Length: 376
Image (cartoon, rainbow, N blue to C red):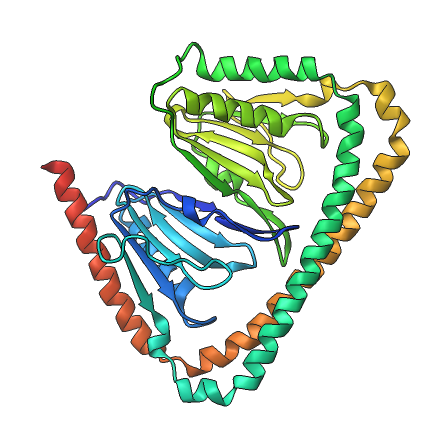
């Protein structure tokens, strides 16, 4: 059994609220060669997050590094727990991120905490639950429309800086960072594995991120500073793509306002991260080997001066639209919490706890199996 002090907790978002609706990277939660994937089903408030958190925390206490997959619609809830050293994942498989087994029995299994609820009590609250579900859906749709408005405004704001950007200069900056990280590493005949996730979320409490948990242990962080449209995402993407070509596994962290954009790149084997250190995830160089890359130096100030009024207006309107989106995400959570209360009242949580202890025992059996294979 592993025991070298407490493990490291890394917090990520496998899905996010975006202008496109809920956007999922759930296929990247764990690699295809996993040992065990447990899909947890059941309604809201039945204890899925609590069950996964208890097992994850137990493994952290045993010395394992554990990923907590956070929920973008509830800051206190988990959508999954991953332990890469064990090839283990527990994943919430309910809407909006429905997950079904790909290799049933051999790797994947489903557990249903709905087995521990009082169906008669829930049916007595059928109308209230149904109405709440419909209202949550309406509130989310309205929030997504405001996020779309925020993105349109942000695109116009970004276009002002893009017009002022010296692309040749920005390309040279990107190449310098790439060469500094990868040196003369040759292209590999076997590309590295890509993993796509979110490091931040547009939540009911506003933008939130857990960058420190993702890059806190790395010795070298390249922190990109600059206005929207100054090439931060392009630089990060170029470095990540080049690392993959060199055979290195890379984590790409995307922007919830525009999931096509990469905000941060992590290369675990090198202990290196390229980070967008501007709002909504402010981050500053703080370690000896950290380096700040200031993208604004590639801007033509005369062009920026011409667009000052548009930039100021866009900045204000963007934050107003984002605030409205946050308001409706918050209202959706309040309605969801009310609906959840019907399930909480109908659950036999003592039985859930007993089931959780049996599940934990099975996970520890897997831990022993993996440990035995490693020493064989």
